[in-house]
Length: 428
Image 1: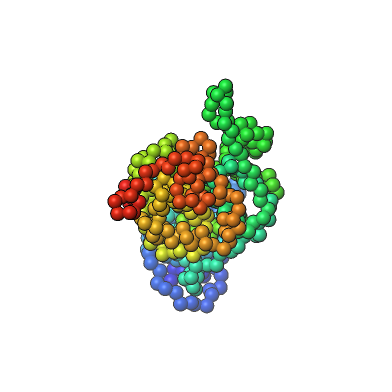
Image 2 (image 1 turned 120 degrees about the horizontal axis):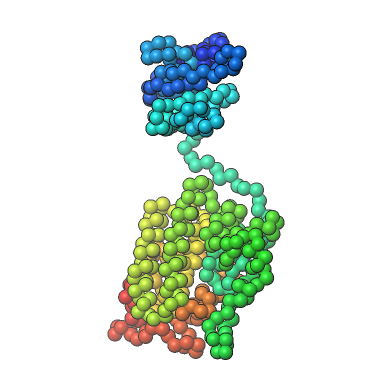
């Protein structure tokens, strides 16, 4: 076969290579012709001036080898066994004096330089060679997913800064509690109300004018809330999704490469969902608007996640244990459950999404989060003070059934529907 012929020639070291003793014959599957055509190959140095020769050769590529001939139908001049290829890439101008060049490197430190007539031909050769090389890689004996290699134990002291609310900070705080990570501080910033003389509204200078922010900005021009500071190496990370994945990698909550891909997709979807929620929470507290919101945006999002869970058949979003995206999704569900109880006096998960109600209950019951749910953090306001709803602690967060009449009027008239049951919102 061509493969054995190349072995006999020293793995195709070329026209200048000396013959090597042939190895014992081995059984091999018949090679399949993949591509053939003319290429111009760089040869060895010729003459006392050290001139480099370029020779046009007829190349044949099979599923296991790339061989070249003086012309079709003649004997093999040389080539390479594809199982020994370590790289196949376009050549730079310095590496090849002609356009459309490419390079093949092998395990025995040989480099082959060739060029094709057109760039399309070059790219076709590259594509087929790389595909064949990949196909020749050893296949794992077991099809089972490889064990997750645990990263070195993360032990750096960190700081996670955010507003004194739940918002985007809650998932990050929960992740630390879940992982039992103790070397963490949670500095929190708070809005203060401006006086009438100051024009009213809210003052964010505790964060905006804080000297710590200016110091952090020197390390990261994108600094915002939330942020993470690694006090061991002074690394500063900002933007909520980046903070989630940074912390997830260090706390071993991202899983395999496939799991990471799933988590990143879910986080992207949750960013969109959070944007829609923030738009509502900060612009209106009118019940009829929330009826529309729960019936459209929330329904669309929940249906997507029910379908995702049904497709994967997993307890949590990515597997049998929670990962990064779960902490943000739980917070989304929990905030909307509280808002629904606050406005309408009833939950929306159990009545409309039993699959998500079970998910919410399973996450809430995780023993690793017991200390979190017993801490002050779940009792922080959902939103900042300037929000139209959730800007202060809701009565339902403290175990109440609806809006606390002692502090605010109920946002929904919960008159009987006529049969003694509370009136149901439209989205049900």
